[in-house]
Structure formats: C-alpha cells, structure tokens
Image 1 (cartoon, rainbow over the protein chains, first blue to last red):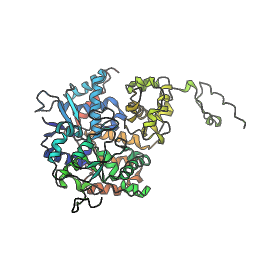
Image 2 (image 1 turned 90 degrees about the horizontal axis):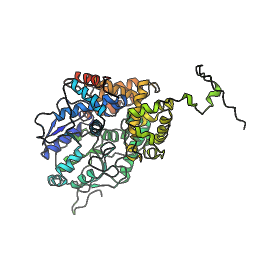
Image 3 (image 1 turned 90 degrees about the vertical axis):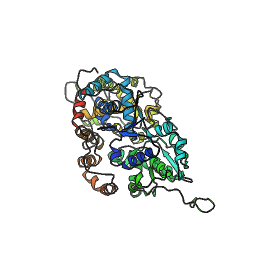
Image 4 (image 1 turned 60 degrees about the vertical axis):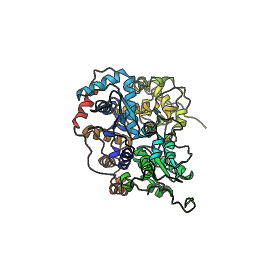
Length: 302
Length: 214
C-alpha cells in the first residue's frame, strides 16, 4: 500500500530537513510514498481565522485528490501521510466536520464540483508517528538500527496539534508513541511534563513578547531535565524552539545551545544515514551525537 | 471618600457623546449589548454547547497564554453569551489564542472553545475591529491572500509583506535570522505555486455560494 504524501508548505521551505529526513527514513524502511499531485496549502490556523467554509473547502481539495489518486489502495481507504502537525490537524478536522455537518459538506461539495473533484470520506489521515509505530512497528525499526543512540537523553516534544483535540493514535495527556520510538533507537526519553504544552505557534512572529516566553519555558525545562536534545515532529515547533535561541540569549541571557531535532533525523542517525541525507547541515544548533564511548563502555561526558 | 453620582444615561436617540463622567462608568446598559451576538458566534463555531458553560474556569487554567490576556477564555465565553460584542472583538485574547486546543480537550461541558475563538477572529476581521497595524490579523489576512492567489503559502514573501505592513523596523531586527535561514537553504523569496492555482479561486468562490444552507 502506497501512502499519499502531503508535504505542506513548511516542509518545502523552513522545514526542509524534515522532508529530507522523513523520506530518507521511509526509504530505508521500504515504506512506499508518493507525493499528492498538485496539492495545495491546508490553510493552517490562518484560514480558519478568516473564513470557515473556505478553510474547510481548501483542505477538502487535498482529501479529494488523495481519495481519487490513481493506482490507489485496492478497496482500502487511501492513506494520507501528513507530517506537519498543522496540516495533520486541519485535514483530520476537515474530515470529521464534513462527516458531522451535512450543511457544511453540501457547500464544500459544491466547491469541489466546480473544479471537477469529488470527496466521499474514504481517506485516512495519518501522521508519521502513527505510521511508524502502528504500521511499521518499533520491532522492525529496532532491527534496522545500526548505530544505537546509547546514552543519549532526549525530551520528546509532541506539541499541540498532533494529539489535540482528536487523539487519533495516542493519548491527549501523556502521549508515548515518540518515547517508544526513541527507546527503540537506543536513546533514553527523559521524563518531563511539557510533552504537549504549546510552543506558541505563530506568536513568535505576531506577539514575540509572549511567544518567546513560551519557547523559553520548554527549552529550559528540557535542559533542567538533562536532555541532550529535544525531539519534535512539527516544523513550526522545531523552528520556534531552535531558531530563536539566539534571541533568547540576547533578551533573557539564557545559555541554551540545545539541539532541537526532528524525530526522523534521529531515526536516520541510528540507521547510519549520512548527515546531508537527513538535512543535518541545515540546523542552527549542531545536532546531538551519540557520546563517544571510552574503553570500558562508559560514556565520555556522563 | 465621596463618590460621584451615577452619570445620567444618554437619551437613546442622541449619539453617544463621551463625557468625563462616562469614563468613570464601569457598567454597561443592557440596551448597549448586542443580543444577536451570541447566536451568531455559536452558529459560526458549531458552538451551541457554549450556552451550557458552567463558568468553572478550567479553560483559563489550562490555557498556556491566559495570564497574558485581557480577558481569560472563561470571561470571553461569559461576555459572548451576554452580548459584549465590542469588548470581545477588541480584546487581545482572541489573537493570543494560538489554537493549541488545550481548553477544548479539558472542557467538562465539551465546548469547542478553540472554534469559538476562530469564530471571534472571523467576526473581528470581517468588521475590522482590531487595533491598526495589530500584527496577528495582518498575518492571517496576508496568508489568506497568498494562498488564494497561488494555492500555496510562500514563507519568505509572506514574512516580508507581514513586516512591511506591521513593523518595518522589525524586519531589520530579523535580518540576521533571515540570513541564517537563507544560508542553510530554509528560506527563499521565490513564490511557491501550484500547477493550476486558478482552481483555488474557483473552489473558494463556489463553496461560498449562498445556496447551501446556513
């Protein structure tokens, strides 16, 4: 079965290393993916703030494209793979609201008809976390590991929109899928309470006084819990937490220097994939590495 | 201390003239409220459950930005229900909401508070009721326009337009960040577009046709 890959806008620009590492890891695991032809923006949080019906129509076009993609899924519902947390939520929300509200469905259907598309609701929206844990399985991932991330401590940061509000594949309050994955890689997830606390989203751009503070809380807490890196699955979380560390140093004198990596980059490292294949050269903060092991098997900096 | 007497109520026919005494007034007359406001917002947000809010404050407690707000989410719900249209639409609260859905998940009455916030944003945008050059609505509008035109969001050009319209000096402050992003291949000023961007305009217009209920 082939996954219909919906990259979204971020994975083509500021989150390029997410796309690079995701595709590299899926290739290594022999999971077939195919980019949806001529996809459009999901609308993110901005469209919903301007017009609701249009926001749902915009997202529904992608659902319709995936549903009607050629070489489909032989009777099974088409699987959309949406790695960006905002895209994932918007597609999932659109699907649920269209199923629940007939009047909305009618309007959106009229819109789709105007561009010769139809949508019946036979698609499944999936996040890479979901696919990696439930379709591929942690066993298969653990077997593929060639360079275990022994001794590396990571703070798994799920962010908001992957598990909220629908919790399609993990729990709202204490999700564990990412923790299970990094454990399969040989790393140790740190116990921390901010797994799903909001990073501020676009607030860093619109109201930076608030946005920066939200980012800071996350970074400082991860550091306090002795994490070597934060691992995330959302391009906006990654951008906020990594790229504003310089600004935080200037404003709050925080000495952070904490790597913020995509989960797929970390998986790729454990698979022994090259840095460039994982987009690691694009990071602002140098990525976390497995601590050099001294003779006798003790980590050098432990 | 002697209290000022309550200000006289302006006659309903005259335009409201702001007088010094008015500034001290902290009550609102029922006639100044918008009785249709709550219904409008509830319909927009599929939020009929809003009327069953028990004012417990769980939303405000779980909200990561409630302490930066002028009215907490709980108060917003109460104010919407009573018709405090102006106060609600002018509040910073609705633009501070980053759509993290914490409140929606925790609400014991299952009110979709995030959707209520979206409905308020839509209403504020439609009526232009936000401070001039206030950044959050500008970002939403520019994003909307960009996608309407090309079908995709182009992060680079969006940021340039956003800063020009809200805070041109902010752009200078962010030059270093932009430069680093560009050098690592994470920022481009090229416009992203679909193969058939015209489809988006057709789709959005057709979905917006009035004959569709609601």
